[in-house]
Length: 231
Image 1 (cartoon, rainbow, N blue to C red):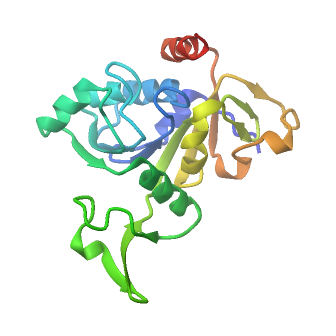
Image 2: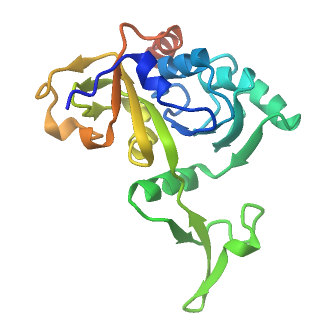
């Protein structure tokens, strides 16, 4: 039941061409150390699913800037001029979804369903004709669930079995992604023995976690983010 492993072994499980969900809402909850190790190991032709593209020079933007990402599924990239340039030059394929829709597509996969019906965007450019259907006299759009080979998430606290606690806006996507991927790799700066976390505070149960990396320290990006949050 001990899920702890080295960061090198955890990321080595990811092959080139993998579909990877990356947790985080901006910087909070983004697994910066796991991303850096993915960058170091050299996996290529990746499809990333993330709420945003981080800012230039940090997080998944490092992977984009090194030409390691073939496709990005996201809600916005407006804070990252580099990602915008790569998209406009057709070096990066970007698939956009409204933020709530992206979250629900991930949640639906984690719940074991294949998709859901909605009336959002029925007559807009985000809807294709083949997505439309009639049911009991009303028109709906079919949205397919969004699943991944791997999920990379940052947890504020964990135990060695892989029970996880998130802080703040990391709650927006990390719990959903931890349920919607075949394998879940977690980084945390704080790991206790089983029983050290209160059961009613656990956001992701250990059953969803495959590998847990205990960080000796947070990356510089995460320390900067925490400073901005506090001040």
